[in-house]
Image (cartoon, helix red, strand yellow):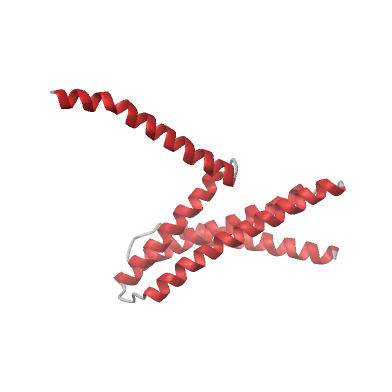
Length: 167
């Protein structure tokens, strides 16, 4: 009986620790990624799911290769580098615009479009892996992602053409 009382008495300490730990994690994520940290956390989760489904697919199809798995992980790290660079460039131009008195706030779209392209790419890859291992994926999901990717690519190409016309 004494053990039960001690366990109940120590529960608030566990809850307090969990709340503090959760607060620290959320605070750090917000500090690093800003108020939209959840999008970046979602991207990380999609990276992990894609890697896991790719690993399972290669195991399921009997084409396992540690070299391919390592290449996949390295590729995902480079995705994060590209996202970071795109946000750095965007924020740099916005800040430089403020210095010289030119509004360049729209340039922040570089980072968000890059993240959007990679999010769509990760989701498509996950769905493709699932289809290849025999999971029934609703057609509208696969088709919808194709359409979304085409729209994002067209938007990116349109931005490139606009810059060429201005230059």
